[in-house]
Length: 210
Ligand code: GDP
Image 1 (cartoon, rainbow, N blue to C red):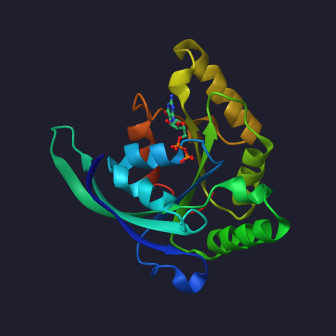
Image 2: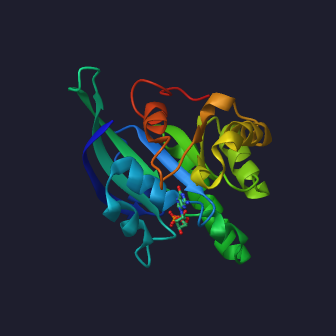
């Protein structure tokens, strides 16, 4: 994929702050430190993108980024342009905080997951090096129960010996109860899995839930 443009649009909490539902959206979530910022950076080739999400005051908000991409054609040219919105959801870290904070986090995410018609897929990032955590299972179940199309990104897979990766992906798919082909072996460090992830996010795929 060729990223023609990527930029921060706005931060939001409540629905009345969301941008107009005028572009297909893909939302990213995961435990803190899972590699979400690194993934967004590599995906877009823009370092400043995730930096914006980390600005004090923005880490608990939903951050919207607009991108324009085009597929690379076989002949090395550029396919038709597509506009897409990447949505960075706050990490589950807050889910284990004080009750009031937790409720607030849950309400904000649930509002977005249930109320956003243009949401095409929910990307759940899991640490590919360690076993799937209960919070990952909970997140995937929650997204599925809200009829969202789930794409799983197994991050930091470069830390695992190459020969062990297929079994690990299989294990993650089984633990999360998602089809094997919806789990993407990813490394921001070695930059693999990037095209596979774009394929799941862009194009005509996944316009419908399920
Ligand atoms: P976030 O909190 O989910 O946004 O996570 P970050 O993107 O900041 O990454 C957390 C830590 O994991 C950082 O120290 C990164 O350098 C490291 N990390 C992220 N992605 C990878 C990866 O693909 N491979 C390796 N080896 N480390 C990674």
